[in-house]
Image (cartoon, rainbow, N blue to C red; front, side, top):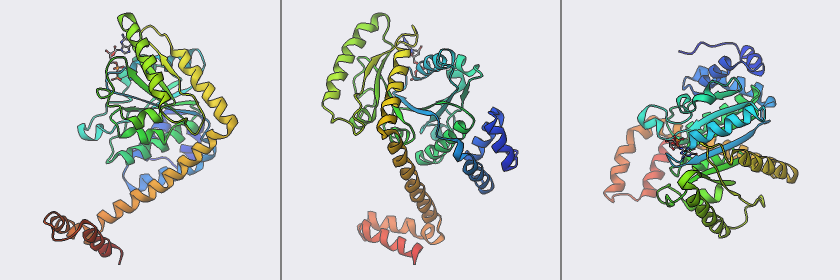
Length: 328
Ligand code: GDP
């Protein structure tokens, strides 16, 4: 049971950068209790004018590609060299299945976790990817109000959560292993198309040459894609988190992107599109939940499914009958 404060207390303490209260507010956001949800919405509404001032960076890649090591290296660089305040959030669609959280885990980023300028929040266990992404969206706003200037949203590259992360962030980093093959990395064409930078990880030791070859191949592959609406040319960069090479270059690319896109207004345009996406997505999710919770639907859904399977009813007709039960 979460101890609740008053709205004013949340707002004042979060604006003052109080991490304990920030954590409690995120817990409210993730709670399924209607009272917590209502309080969370009030807090978020009050903090909305103070949000939006960060660079939101999505980071994805197959398990083992080196995400946590990379986040640790880039994160420490940002804090120590660029004096930034950094929050690391995670979207982990697998955590609902295992009940545990894999991403955004403090033990995976041991140095970063001890930094006062860093805030690491593990992935919430949610019902659906959409639900988890929605919490993360609200957590981003809270972190921004608490003064975090750079936000990482990490996800595991398994092909479904990328779209959600893409719709939450300004810049999307795709981490790749040299020589692993696209299939092994769970890479779908769509994910490459979403990326704002490709990073070949573990470019060190005997792997360096392979990484250079991979870089050339990915540059060629990118030529086959249409120019993105932003006009941005996607860089393909090498990095070694172990040897700390290529890390500051990644940050340079992100900054260059931010400057160019803010100038061209694409930055705000993309965020506006994201707001609309989440507005519609929330309506869609709420309607869906309400529909399946409707007593008549719950009562008849199995029977309709059977009728569809046995060929008694077409999928369309069965769906229509259920919808009529709920919306008459
Ligand atoms: P994640 O599953 O994507 O988060 O990957 P991890 O960050 O846990 O890294 C997976 C493995 O790759 C670990 O054994 C790391 O030590 C290793 N690794 C990560 N980054 C590098 C790197 O830059 N160079 C080398 N040689 N190994 C790395």
